[in-house]
Amino acid sequence: MPAYPPLSLHVPEPPSRPGTPTDFSYLNVSAAGAVRRPPVDVRPDETLDIAESLVRVLDDRGEAVGPWIPAVEPALLRQGLRAMLLTRSFDARMLIAQRQKKVSFYMQCLGEEAISVGQALAIEPDDMCFPTYRQQGILITRGYPLVDMICQLFSNQRDPVKGRQLPVMYTSRAHGFFTIAGNLGTQYIQAVGWAMASAIKGDTRIASAWIGDGSTAAADFHNALTFACVYHAPVILNVVNNQWAISSFQAIAGGEAATFAARGIGNGIASLRVDGNDFLAVLAASRWAHERAHRGYGATLIEWVTYRAGAHSTSDDPSKYRPADDWARFPLGDPIARLAQHLTRIGAWSDEEHARTQAEVEAEVLAAQKEAEGYGTLASGHVHDASTMFDDVYREMPAHLRHQRDQARGA
Image (tube, rainbow, N blue to C red; front, top):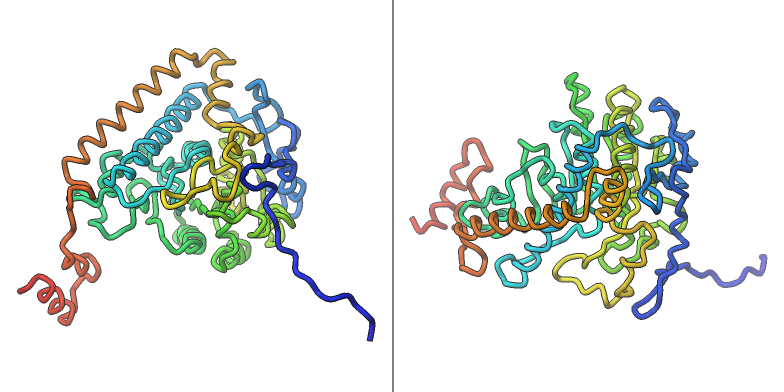
C-alpha cells in the first residue's frame, strides 16, 4: 500500500475578519468595456470566458465604454435612478419602523438596488419574476403601491396577504411578482416550471428567477438548471452574489473554486458574470438574456457581482463577522452614485436634481407609511383572527375544516 499522508478537508476562509482590511482581489474585476458581447444565439460553451470575467460598461469616470453599451435614452436611466433612490429610501424608513416595533422583521437590499430595478426595466412588465427577499426594487419599479407593501409589513387590516406571510415576503400577480417563499431555493425550480408552461401554451412571457449565492447550494438550484437546459426553458436565472449568506462568506457555497456563472456552463446554459453595481451593464445583460429567451435559444444564467452593504436582516449584526468599512472599500462602488455620475457626465442630471429627487422620494415613502399606519401596526396590537387561516385555501371547504373554523371562532 502507498504511504499517503493523512487526509484533510479544506474549509474556505473569508478574505478578512472584523478589524482587518479586506483583500478584494478574489473578485477578478475586468476593466470596463473589456469583455466581448456575443450574439444571442451563441452556444453555451462559448460563453465560458464571459462567465469567468466581468461585464462592465461604466468606467471610473462614469463614461460608458465597450460593446455592452445599451441603446437607451437618458429618460429611462433617470427613471431607473429615481426607482433606486425610492427603493433605498423605502428600506431606510422600514428599518426605522422595525426598530420602533411597528414591524417584527425587515430585510434591506442596500447596495443591490441596480440589479432588480435594472432588470425590471429591461424585461416586459408581464414577465413573471420569482424573487428572493431582496428584490423589492422590482415591485417598486413596476408601480406596486407603497402603501400595500407597508401594510403587508405591518400585517394590518389592509394587509394584502391577510397576515399569512412573514414581512418582506410580498406577492402581486398583477405586477408579475410571484409569492416569496421562506424556503430558499424553491423559487428557482418554480420559475423554470412556469417558463416551460408558458412555452407549452405558446405564450410570449418569460420567467425571471432569483437566488442568492448561499442558496445555490440548495438542491432546487441544481434541479432547475437541469430542466432549464434540457427543455430550453425561456427563463433568466439570476444569481445575486452579494458576498455573504448571513455570516457565511460566498466561498462556503462554492464561490472560491469557480464563479457561480460557471455553474451554468457546466449545465449547458449560456452564462454571464456581470458587475451588478453598474446599472448600464445590468440593462444590457438583462436585455441580452431576455432576447435570447424570446428567440428560442433557451435560458441564461447571470451572476450579478455586488455587495450586501447592510445587515442580512434586522436580526443580524454584520460587525461580528466582517470589517465595518467593507462596503466603502468594495471596488464596484455604490450603484446609485455610479449612475448619478454617468447621468451628470452626459448632462442629464445634477447635484441639485439629485437632492430634490431624494427629498421627493423620502416624502413619498413617509406619506405612504402614515397612510399604512392608519390601518394598524404591530405596535398597535393588531392581530388577525386565527380563524381566517382556513379561508382562501379550498374552492369548497371540506366539512371537517368548516368544523375546525367554527371551533376557532367559538361558534
